[in-house]
Length: 376
Image 1: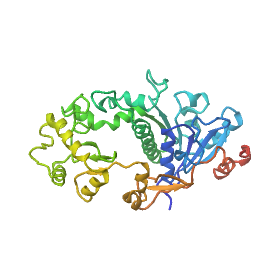
Image 2: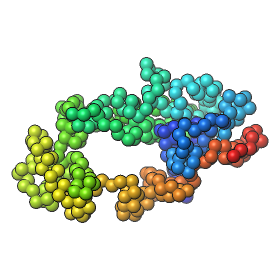
Image 3: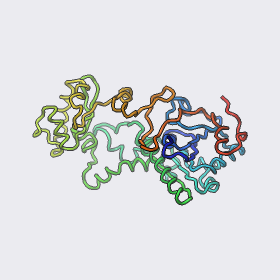
Image 4: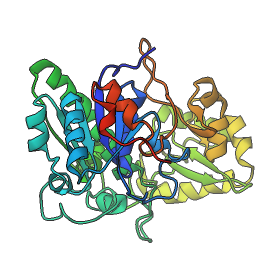
């Protein structure tokens, strides 16, 4: 069955990281997304366009030389037939290619033109290079992470790149596509990773304004300050996630460990959190991780094992939910979220650049002879 976005046609300018992630989400949900590879451009990451390029799954590819008049006209004809276009270049790159929003919207007034950058399309940093760590560092969120006696940690590039960037662009595209369906008028979606990463921290901005969040690191409820919201090492060198934030769940934790509720005061005495964390740490170090996982299994104590990559893919809960799929021999996360009437699926793995050039033109009502056949 087709996904919920079936019938939409999206042109994706091939890039790195969050923009391909957003395009992957749309393709997973059933949109026809074609990838435009620039002819002769060498991949910046060795695994790009191979079966290991999970972010490129589910889309066909056309290879064009966008600086050549013939291929530039092909591109504009594709844009004229598309519902959306997505690009993740620095500001001005698409304009220099003669494919900026003004020209594309002139060719197709209902087009949704999605732009993915780190800093946004304007401002003093707009033209500056950066990566997830730079963007997250500009939001205040990174400064709130980690222990107080060390620099903020380097998290995986999930927050700014993929949460604040890719998911924000995917949401923006769908919102603008819905608006275009009603009004018949397209628009530009300016998705900046700094904006998105800041948006993800909205709750904490509220906590700060209400006096419930300290500027000190690891001194708050959800930053590792509370002994009942943190990670603990076990006897075998593996780890537990311990997170009974609600008092009723905290009570279960104490009952299972045989601890005195009068001594473990939950949120009533934050000054005692460090001492109580040390007591819990000593307890969890006495047994291996899976001992504790078995002890708390089936309870609401909010204690769970921290799994590695292989364990996560093989976990019984993930297995029952089919949370991972294997495409071209590569284990990877399944499309999400789930739709009851229009389920999503991964059509295929990453396509080689230009693998479908003539096929795409034929399917989109254009003369396939306008592009050279794919050359391996």
